[in-house]
Image 1 (cartoon, rainbow, N blue to C red):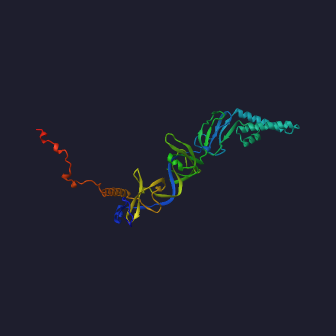
Image 2 (image 1 turned 90 degrees about the vertical axis):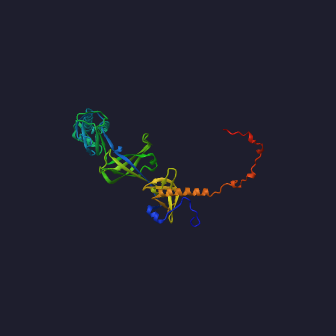
Length: 382
């Protein structure tokens, strides 16, 4: 007992010298912002919204290539190839004819003639526009007044050529992709996380990434999308992250270490992970009561937080001190003390009352029927 209060049998007392020799350390139970850290492996890939396909809407033949290998960087508006198309030549001839008719009939005294000439020119101009001729190209055609045999196809965006099917002299069918150009100013990173980590990830949360060839440097991005299904084989969830890449440091198919951190609670009761003794059946900590006394106390844990901490739902409160080293020796001593105490309590229970052998007297024994015994009838085996 201590101050009239009986301590549990499992409570142990250790003198100051032994505490120092054992290297006992304690840490306070505290309230802090609880966050969940997730680390995963990611793969850099293309931003699918910034991939551009280059094709034409008519049949023809490539007569000149300006960009002739995969991986070449191009600028928006840069020439890619020249193409010859009989259909395009006919369309240019029709356009020039419509221009000529409007010039000759524009001063006609008949309004219907002028309207017909204007309508024909609009139709011819629209046909060229539908075939992706730019206004500047149409203006040059009108100014030159002569049909151009080939049409130059320009890059729709700045980026890198990631696919090329165009070859010199190659026949091109309408709709066939000749180039694919990817803008790498922003890239995606595909990440897979475990199913139990999924509740802590949300669209729009911050993300960080490290690359092996840029040690010590963390790039910042965002969670762009959380896939609404799991992989049936690995039971993992897939995330899509977005990172700025205007410096060109990120290359598709690179591996990266990705770090996510989600704040769960602002004022949670937390303890160091090393303070917890987990036997598989129960979890407990040793609470320092002062003056060399330590009490084992079962606890209920929540989630595992960042900085090697556990959330505590029941068992301890903020301000108490828990043991973070040598607690396994404490646990053995505590169990031994508890077992001995139970044995002592069992011995202290008085035995049940009953007749004592010392009180037995031969005179009190009932020998009824003894006179009927005939000793002569008893035979001894030889």
